Image 1: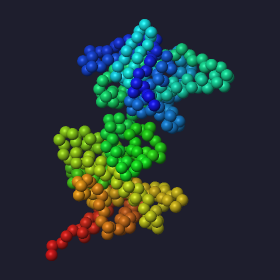
Image 2: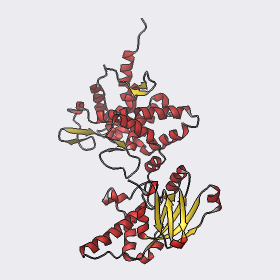
Image 3: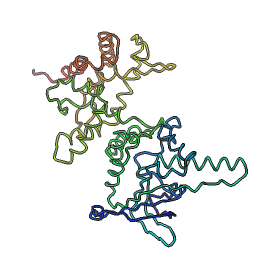
Length: 396
């Protein structure tokens, strides 16, 4: 299916002006401000926007911004162009035919204004539905929107402009990182094992086929080998609990590695490759401990400790995270030079689960307290360390 971002769109306008600044001209860019009838902005896709129209994915997420746009269109449409900040559309080129009041826009996509476009579409479709019920033609009011056309040849700059412009509603850090393609290799590796799933790269990525990238990064930091951690003055246990306590830091630190791996930072490059290699296995490890049958009979109770549904269960992250942190003792490079989780055959999962249950009891049965205690991570790590010592060759 052809979209605006991969072809040419004919846009009718009321007024257009070239407002290119000297700085834009020096960068090979141009800028045009246009006044266009509402329907014209529906011709563009949102592929270069950081996110789509949010209520399209979940109608319950129509917030005060959406409702404010709706109220203006319905009650004060003559003031819409003044009350609304307008839309920004990126494109690779634009040809203005002023005698026809027509602009030919190449590879155009909404950069900022997806929520405004969504509300305009909702408004016009509502008018059409009302007319259909009365067997009449929809009367569209003569309302215009202000549109800024950014002619930018640099694809990466388009992403940065989109991030900078999207400030009217909060843009999550994960969405920004996804737009910068920081998760692409992680997702590609992840899907080699979990073929029917995808990592979220945008806050509007919802559904059963998406896995929370933020959660995966927490797990990857837990599994990160001790020698790759930036310990500073912290103990290993203190470094591990960051994954539970500071979810956003897991994303920020990963982004720093993505950037620094190409700047002769060997530690960042090694850690990044470790995360990419472990993306799929790490998620499998998380699901294994979360749903492990050996939890049966361990007297976990209440939704804070375990959630039950029929014959299945999901154990709280507060209990699971310290276990995964301990399993980092089994992470190493395999014979192919790839990072993997190599658990010895003699390892007993039940021993780890029993130890975790004891730690939960020692922390008043509160998973949150358990996962925020550095000593818990250190205590559970003793179990895999013991197995490793058993397998080490002894001097005769």
